Image (cartoon, rainbow, N blue to C red; front, side):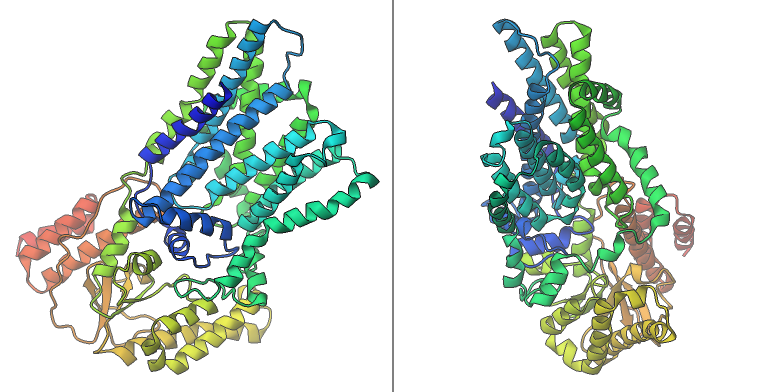
Length: 625
């Protein structure tokens, strides 16, 4: 029976995840992680070597495109997490069962079925809470992170609640230690678990002289778990993407300790209150609202049956929230996943407490609990369904299609399309978010040697400045002396000089284009820090830098734009880019007296944003031509 329930806890979420799975690339880390996994590169700190190696296996599945299979990896790992959580909840409910009286075999069987159903309900509750579900629908590191969290909680509790004399002899503690090492080789936020686990260890694992020799074995297993980090040393010269130049020990150590992003923790404490409010505002919908009501009853149940475990959960929840609200990144909700897992466990115990107290038919109530656990599925389905979200993938393809042969594009992520799918490998793309890193400047130098040679002096000067930035970051983010303030100006100046040199040195031979986020000004007559005396003309999803204002036709009628209603900033941003591209193309044709095409593109712009007054005004002007 337990195997059947375990299978259900795996298969049902997997079916839902596959139905709502993202088909291609999305925003933030998707492009980078997909390229790294498919080509065995090195991802952003802390490198995620375990994730990369597993991802590489999925990228070689004999069906579908690599990006789909990599998204599928998250769905499979998340489903395994739910199956592990089911078994963990069953263990907890069986171990901390309020009903300690002897029961008949019939009643015992009914109680066991009830525990199965409550465990299944708790596991489904996590499966369909939005943040966890979202991590299962796309290529991200958090599904694997959650699998490690739940596995470690399960293993440690098995150890803690077993006979004390056999704790350090048990295979579970050895396995726990090894997986803990693997966990830290995957994501350093695993440290959010440590205060709670240390408390359990203090209560259940008293240190005696007889166990000290075991420490050597445990240390060995933990270090063995960290060995995936050596992958970063081996692959530090990957030609596709090797973030941080991890092929040497100093850079490798900086990478695995996350020094590039370390300043984001407690960097903006004034935002902590806002982050705290954001978490608790979204928290009720995460659990499908109704399950919030069960958490207090779970607290009551554990207060009576295991105050130690209740304190452990409280420490874990508070530690997670306190640290996460002080970390300044865009996808912050994934850092609250430990707190959500704790809430799910408490809700499961709350269901058990209420069913015990009702005195009704426990079998029926157990199945009702499973049905109630599907409330997050109903509440979150529309928001979590990403099966039709192609906007990021389509935009990247459209932007690359907009570029002439052998051109240079500034500020477009395209690792996956160019290096995995070999789409437009002739184009040199400079990723603006990465261009402040010395390793990435070296990557561009190696990828396009001709580009480097034509602007060698400017490249070398800029590389010197960003190298100084890497090793003296504090002096740039928080300058205290006049010299440090001057260095900030030098950094900006060296960037402007390099961009200007790239444009001028290649003018007439290679086109230089940017994405629309480079400037919100008029696309037809522009000027900015690093380009002077150039027009910037609309060319598809891009803007072309030119000294010649002669009319140039460019057809983007077949560019894909699939509207995707979302409150996500990135989706709204790219939607606006499509609007700007169509609008500016229409304005360009209107300026040159091309009524038919001007009207075609302004209608495309209005289709993206029907309420825009400027677009409707331009349509009226065009119709009067």
